[in-house]
Length: 260
Length: 260
Image 1 (cartoon, rainbow over the protein chains, first blue to last red):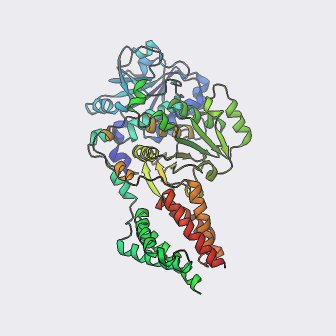
Image 2 (cartoon, each protein chain N blue to C red):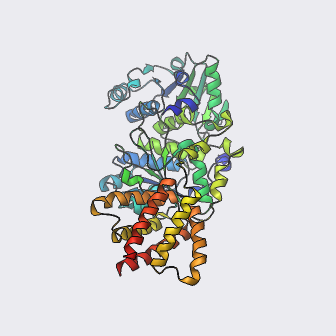
Image 3 (cartoon, rainbow over the protein chains, first blue to last red):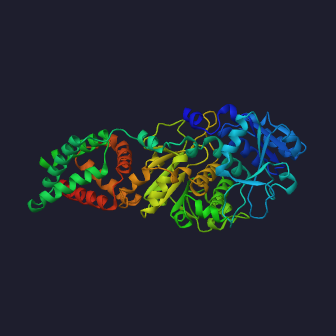
């Protein structure tokens, strides 16, 4: 999956300069889910602020817990967790709150993070507790508020899912804007096995037509029109070289059987 | 959050033409998490294939379960869940699997979904069970495989998080690329006529298979493998509704003749 590291908004080294901070998570499953999303998207540094101790122990010892949980640090307050960071980004929705600092939509976040890291800074992405999100006090440690664009009717995200979505955005989404030329064409071309050349399509059309005749599908009066339609049909289908060969094989067999 | 609807890759009405399908989810918490992510990003249509009945009941009656869970449908098999869909996209990682169909990276998926919906189609986004993901058999119902770009050291995502990341990508991420020069959509739109829905492709597969058998093309030992290949072939060809009808007519005639 080399392309992840090529196209990524953040290189692996850059991701090591980006901390994920969970403030007072209540549910041990959510700590585990956040850690798993970090492992999925190649982030390694987790800090947990004021965790409930039994849950913290539980999530660290869970079966299949990512290694990064062992190295996670736990701090008493948010200030301590983000002490070494030069850009602190709080996450949340704006539905119930009038923001006091700059708001950046998640889809627009990556350039902020990258430029901070490129000039030697360290970034923290801060997530609040499940029910209430980050407090006004928490947000006062943040340089900016990242808004995850959710539906106004159900704005509040599950903690583990919010972490996943943010890290996907930073790590994995190739940046169309940044790189100028966009890649999906190439992506589309990767599917491309060669499509069958015209002569192969003609060969195919010939044999299908013989099957049509043998089956009594194509009466004399319609033969010319059917041949024309068939030719167009094969071009709409755009079979690959290999698929054309397969279809040819099937029709040869069918023809042989009908002509027996 | 008006901007969500303005900048969104998919409008609200378009999102109603996009189903989320969970195949045999084991954990009721994950069903709930998937439903919550759907509510967060404004998707409403959920189908669950072969759920374990007690878990299915449990997740539907959970406190705070999104309303869309009440309207979710449960089906016995994947074919039934995607019967009305014209573009079926399976999700997964490529780490352990050699793909048999077109692979689209998640960051490149939206144009495919949107152009399908804009020409009147219906899309399904299919997620496999927690442990093993979609099987080869499941994938044979898919037109394309969506690759969520994850770290090779920890490729496998939690189900609820995978759903969240995919729906974020489709609903919420404003597309910088779209506004600039981007062509594959137009290319795709030139095909303009509606592609045949999954159920029509299955009908077609059934009749072609009968012809294979009647022609002695498909010996017993190969029948299962041939059926699998045929299903994939028909999805690669992406026949339109009308072309599917034509091919069906031809094969019915051929079959009738061979069986005489």
